[in-house]
Each structure stands twice: as structure tokens, then as C-alpha cells.
Amino acid sequence: MTKTKKHAEDTCPLVYQCRLPLSTRTVNRLADLLRRHLKVIRSRWRILPPGKIAVIVLAVLRHHQRLADMAGGNDVSESTVRRWRDELITLLAASPRAWTAL
Image (cartoon, rainbow, N blue to C red):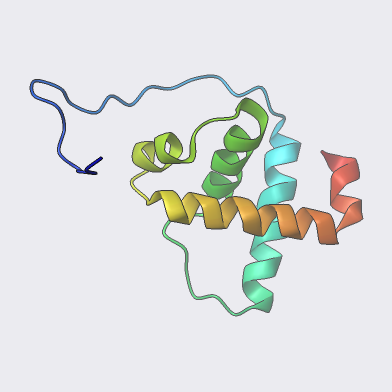
């Protein structure tokens, strides 16, 4: 099997929106957890802001969105979305207090 980034003839990628039933509080808690982590590790930047990363990760976790689909719709690589997912799961696991807010 050959992998190629070319699209099939007469096709183009389609990006769509869907509703993700989450409270603002949940997204903010996860984004704040990520912001604190980035400050601790002295990360200078991320390609997307922590709030957007939180929404992407929650979509992957709650609705089983494929990493490649979430990556393509947000102009990042699949490995970046995987890294964000793994990073936030680790942060949540290390912070039991954060689970009570979700």
C-alpha cells in the first residue's frame, strides 16, 4: 500500500462544524491546567491557544473524533493532536482536583 497526500481526482477536503456539548467551565479548567503546565515547562508558544487545544482534545476524547480529522480541520499534524491528547491526559491524571470540575 502506498501512502500519498494527494487527493483522489475531483475531490477536496471538507471541514465541517459540529456541536460539542461542554460547559465553558470544563473547557476553561482544562485550558488553565494546560496554561499552568506550559508556564512550568517554560514553553514559549503553541501553534494554537490553550483553549482551542482543550476543545480539540475534548472532541477526541468525548466523541472519538479521529486524530487525523481533528488535525486536518485545525491545520496541525496528526502527531501534534496525539501529543496534545497524551499531554492533557497526563495532566488530568496528575491533578485529581481537576477531575471534580469536569
